[in-house]
Length: 371
Image (tube, rainbow, N blue to C red; front, side, top):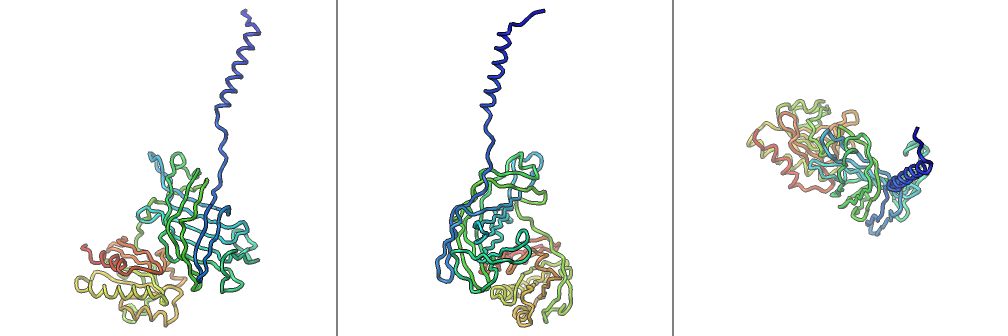
């Protein structure tokens, strides 16, 4: 039997230990998570008062959603982001929801500012209201002892979001590291007649965020088919006056639809514009119909009349049970044109301030196009 000298054994053992130590030294230390953080201010003017809200160091929560990539794709898009920023006590809360539009551009779709937030005894803002959390630095709200939340009515704000690479792109759960999110553009929000406009250019979000994958998401908004619903026709000049029916009544025709409120001046202007277009188009063709859907906050007869007296085409009254606006996933001033087979041809996004020339072009062009 051949004996190996002890010195040789010790030499081999020492070499192995040195190799292990060297390998361990070459391994990068585990990366520490960097929660999404915000810097910057929200600046506006309310009733002649300049307001600057500093969000540096505020709490940030984010919920991102990406489209799960299919085999062979090296990356995927992140078309939906919900970002909430608030001070440590929950006050001055700002909710921002971005979604991809029909071109794939990620636009601000929803926004809420909690001028007076509520503190509730249940989880996630549910249960009984315990106390109010006014935003320090914000002017006193005219409405006393109440939660005050401003809602988005108009915006041109967008957000650039980088793609999610593999392997996270094909996963139902992934982390986006070292994000740099810098919204651009402005937004206008309103509460009970009080309104303010603010730029998002001064807010920057940096850090890591978690994203949930979905097979139902698209990198661009998808045109949806003609929705199915039934509601009461309140137009005295309509053949269907007083009846409850839906868009199936106009099968085989092109259909232009606008969502309105009787108290809304721009809505009335849209209806009048459509009536003018209707008369012009009737000289060329009759394979189309125009429809207005009056919202649930305009059920009073005088408000209904402000819509139906402005046109001669069908005006439907939406109700919570009919859910017409919900079926279209629409808001005030939104308008669509559907083709003979029910596919969407055009969409006009609503806002408090609209360009009637753009609205006319959006509606008239598809309606007058050859079959």
